[in-house]
Length: 399
Image (cartoon, rainbow, N blue to C red; front, side, top):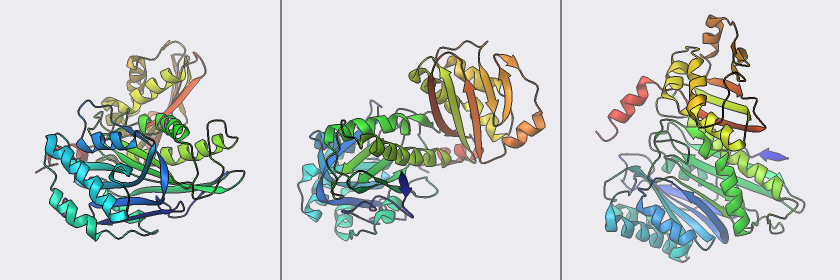
């Protein structure tokens, strides 16, 4: 049974420290952070599927290949993407600077950046900033503040779960509001745990958690150059090493997925210009893969997102998105509901009060449900409405 840690974050698990500073990469606010474990960690990471990848991803891929790491250094305000050999050298130097500060090897530091693409990173500012960072067990919120760009608030969570031999804690933080699309998004997320976890199991558990969380959100259909999620497990809780065969493996994964889903939903809710969170649930699909395709198509549809922003119960747009999603669909079997209003049953239109349906769509959370009646596949995706403010934010991003 998981327990939510009040005001929890990446330093809630034992043995983790964090800190942040303003070094001048952004025009204001914290913009450089370090997360550090006092113990060596099992490490796992996943990165953007965009073929254009930022320099920090190249460095982090190399460093995490052995399944070990002990620290993360991250900046906001500059993506260090499309910056050539100089950008790669800067990412390497970030790792070395952070390593020297905490007394570990550079290859045990993972690097992440977020911000404007195609602008050289002012590494001299990072050099000065690293020295100014003060690490503490209470620094998780500072670190969460330092990674946001167009986000309206920080995104943090922690929960604890009782295993047979120990209470372990999982903490997480994330950023993301625009360039968000399945197969990860313009997001960074860092997850820490004091559980002892075998590296290959941590990697597999992280993949499964991402599949039901960060790969099930969409804000605007754009996949970034910098998407990164990293998990560190330092074993400070003293539990028996978790492997795929452990009796406690399932309990750990449930808690890990709760952290990942909570962070993912928070990203979707905070989409640039968003006023509503959209949750699309698909059941009865021919397979889980089909259910995911259908649910993601719904929350990714600009027409669906626009209709929901305008409180228009134009359910045909939802059905159309399911139809082009690539999932197997028989329109004569589909049930569809907006909130508690059934608008389609076995492909037959159901009469409903349009004014009441419109009032449901005025809520800050909108629920769309479809049953395809073709199998046992089920999935849920999250997105947000498309507002005029999204256009404003993204038409002035660098000016």
